[in-house]
Length: 276
Image 1: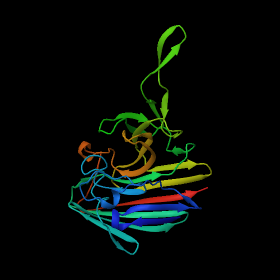
Image 2: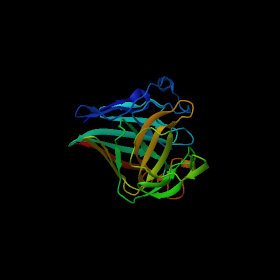
Image 3: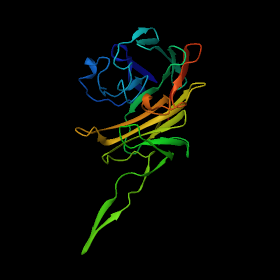
């Protein structure tokens, strides 16, 4: 597996390729190269480092809009409240990224490896059946509990016309969050209580494994089938290992965010492997 990153623009992972396949999805976004701290998120695809929040303020965190300093295999960024270092190395069939965040003891944060993937309509996201999750039906902080992969009705009822009869309301079918399928105009997010997820697409498989002792570990899924943004929707699929159980740090409960211990450092490891 080969990885390319862009330290000058937020440390973004710009390529994740294996066996001749590029896994990361991209889109043209001219605002990306002009982004400054505090700007609204400029979605160019790839894998963004979102910390200390995903939604909320600052939008998609404070690290993606700042230049990183490269030193060999390591890259680091200084933000007002923390210092983050990432070191990328090789493992059999994949890559491993080791992270270290330094901040004042007690500092709370979220982190997401915001990976947007180039997956076909036949693609499937594999997470342990029945894993507890939180479903976000809009861009806010409201969520509802569900068990992976069934997330209840996917939308409003559909009116069905019959000859000589009034329209009849037909209940929308349950949503299978693991199946991507063709574009249907929806955009939904979910956070699932697991540190492991895989993507199956044709003959290829990509696996994510996140380890962070003592911290809340989850996988976020962004299932945008041309439902976002409203003015110019596009398709994007996110599988995002994360520390934390919510998208917005401001909405985090006592156990919903990572916390810096007395040592002043938090360490975590993300392993990504590709297999046939």
